[in-house]
Amino acid sequence: MTATSPAKRQTLPAGEADAVQRRHIVSALVVDRPGTLNRVSGLLRARSFNIESLTVGTTHEPGKSRMTIAIRGDDGHLRQVLAQLERLLEVLEVSDLTGVQHIELELVLVEITPPRTPVEEHALAAILAAAGGQTLSTHPDVWRARLTASPDRINDALEALRGLGLRSLVRAGAVAMATHPAHPHETSSSENGATTA
Image (cartoon, rainbow, N blue to C red; front, top):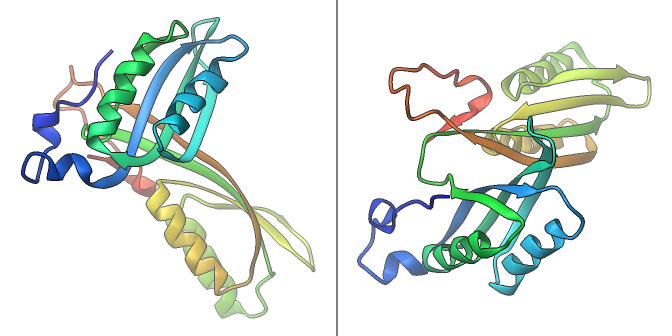
């Protein structure tokens, strides 16, 4: 169970850096049992963190789940939260991926107004391609598509889709995985903006 060292994250004088509000990605391996999600999310809310998204899914090990939590808060509070999470019996491992090389992706389903001209259809195809998207269904009244990319590319795509008639969306939240430190020469695909430092 590790947390990013304060010395590695600090870019401002002591005290000022800890007070900066920023986005953090926390990964936690937990025991798959009723009440675990409530305990973890309750602890974060009690520390006044703004939870952007929280995703939970099973792992390759029976009885264990992986949580990926995107939150906003300052570094000082985050260190306290990581320490408190480690003390929960349900939490087996917790790490802050914010300052390390990791892969982060998000899934979004969208409904959009069908393109009315070849120019609009070409623009839509370009937006989807930039965000790992794919058209799922077409209907005279509405088209549906999915996006799979980093949160930044998702945000850019959604902003562009608003100009083409974005009607509704369902956003699943981020999932993240640290790249393996034992392979320093490993090459990672930056397709869809998935790999971040």
